[in-house]
Length: 153
Image (cartoon, rainbow, N blue to C red; front, side, top):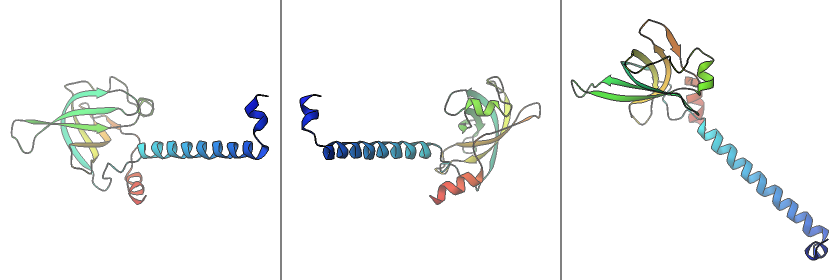
């Protein structure tokens, strides 16, 4: 035993253990809150479903979420386009429902059904995509119920 260990009473060592457990618990609870906040769908208005048609700019196949970027003809500026961003599930999750990295290519003409962003920016959570050949790919990770329940918290 070192000099410091000899002088610490059993009660003091017990307090140090309790302090360590309390700190560890606080860290874990904080981490859980961050993880839960990341998986909220409060950004999206599940009570409103919208559909736009446009041209694929790109498909971002990255974790934690894939994104589909689409040029949509502007309603405000004739002859111009607005860039919409549509969040989807992770590459692993969307792969399980038929998506692949080559599902969409820049230049593809598609229709996107989505839950819009609450703040009014262009885009939202992807619900489904109608491909040029008529096939439909579904989004992952969002439902109007998940949006509604995240608003109640």
